[in-house]
Length: 442
Image (cartoon, rainbow, N blue to C red; front, side, top):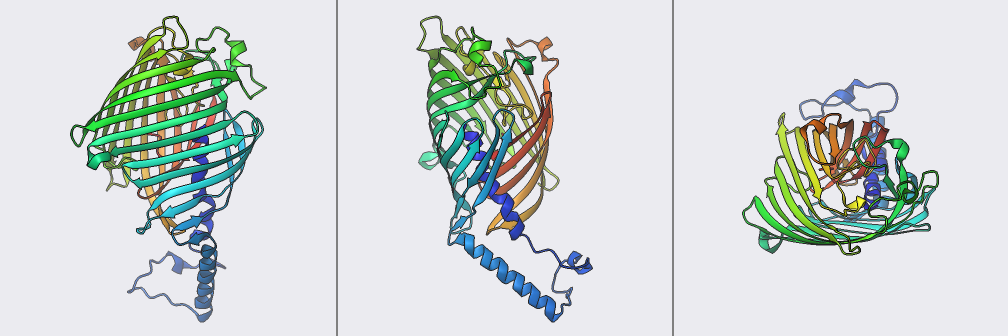
């Protein structure tokens, strides 16, 4: 739910590109535009050409003054989004960008209006704060005329107390009308697609200590309350009808206690160019809503390597994820999944579900240029990638055959030092898929 709202905020850079670029030459091709301007290469211009250049510059400054007011830049935009699960969203949004004295983007405020054929009209406000590379805020509030609601508050600081401590808080309440369930396993058929509305409340508090500059230990307490309700997509079967014996249909109140060890040598938290990241955790969970055996353990290993090369213009990124649950009475929405913008990008969210997940992602991030837009310098990047993943009931070497594979291409714009806008296009066995959002997928 939050991801869909995040993706719209990044679209502010696209329409503004047109008026921010240098104006194209008028008339026939002029080879002088291919010559680098410098003091030792004089460029001959006529009086008319100089007058026309001044006129274009004045128009550009006048246009810019409509949207830039001191440290704030307003960019009213049309908004459009489409993905496999939710169909289309169309409307408008008004990102307000705030920079600091150095010209770095530090805050984004984005009120929006959207229409979706399944949930009607949606009104909302998004806020994203980047006071430093180590500290982040976000808040989302939205209301739809049918079913959907969303309140999401997040805060994270990985260098609190002068760099000694880690603090993170997440508080979320939402109704997502577009959840899907296809059945369990790596070969779950698209023909068994069903939908439901998930009403969820999530609260998580994380505290940690940086033992060394690279090693930290963290403890998290989590509450996850879920109610399964009727889905919004009438053309699909309801999950409750197609899978009546599915564990978790009656809802859940899950309490989790997690211990994690993290090793992190990345140069930056948000726009990483080099280093190694590893996070290993073990979590004990219990569903207090049912008296049947309902305790389970979740173990997760997430490793990432960032390797710059070719004079740091290219960054090769490799990621390995292993996620598994063990125990009875596990609701289906508490099990590991593949599919979505951070795992298998060729598939919709939670496309494959089972007790064990293995995933590898390979991505080559290629910086190819820079563009100044409304006073912000944006690095331009393309990123060919391939995602390979497999779900299974328990780990076994012979089960690693026939994984899901989706190649794709990412297009990114980076507003240094903290903000990444991206479009990832991928193709899986269900067909093509597109994700748009803020921040790197991993």
